[in-house]
Image 1: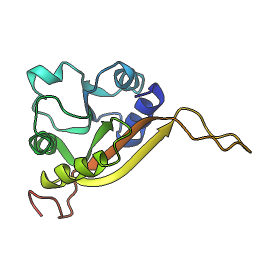
Image 2 (image 1 turned 120 degrees about the vertical axis):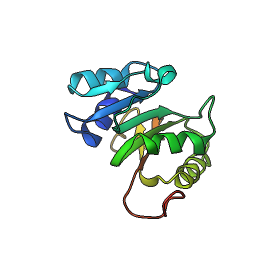
Image 3 (image 1 turned 90 degrees about the vertical axis):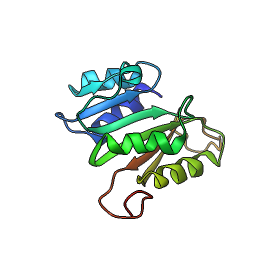
Length: 152
């Protein structure tokens, strides 16, 4: 994840008093959280638990190493405020991966909100070059509207 993507997630999906759970490798999200004066459970949240307070944003890498996807999303849902989001950073290249993530999230009661694809450079006028994608992010939400596997 780039620094710019970390800033975009923090600023677009949270307010200053909101809690963010950072489960990603690397300092990019932590830098954005600190710069935006947000509260967080940083990477130390992984081994000790996520705390008692519900978060507005949980950011995680994918694929998961030690949890089933549905169980992980059930835990995320239990630690999110209503309207809160889970941002899932995907390994780019596998076109079926976003579908698999959305299916697991829906089974856990989360709803699909947005798919963000970020390229490393903007296209130049008059050039027909393919963009190199450096970040592929699925945004899932804990919605009050039914349709998830737990309540709906």
